[in-house]
Image (cartoon, rainbow, N blue to C red):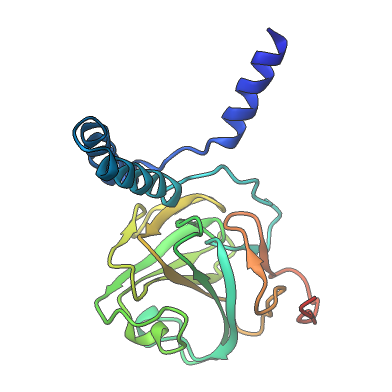
Length: 237
């Protein structure tokens, strides 16, 4: 009996909840799969595979988020595709000073739930319609469809996080609205089927990650605003 319970616990650990936004896609496909498994098995198995992928794409795992003041946490899973010092887009309202922008590229196999990089209040939320270029391109930050959130921390520091639609992604979903308070690591949205998320740090602050590194949303530390640690060197091995 204890072996059986241990097996059940292992299965529960392996299974990851599906976010509620994915159920509108998953349930009809799963129902169609069951129907066609009875009527025409080849199509039924294809729909079963599609249902499994939808459940996989919309998975919503729990994360263990560092809570120390000053930390900026990755808002998304994916590859760090760029760390650049740029003048932020005027739409963000952050002024003309150059800031470090850390870009995270999400493939269709990454978790697509987005989490707040810091605790604070959403000071501005701006939707910008645009193109659907490859989200890995630098110009995607200014030309693609996007949702801009500027979060003000309790210390009055503004951090911007931008959800950018990609070549395949056609829908940005944001759960939080302007004026809402968010906790660090709190889920605030998702982007369907491949995308990118940019984080703009305060002027003069550096990132603690490297291009090519894999970020874990809600866990990976992108920067420490209370530290003077220099930008880290890294190598691929």
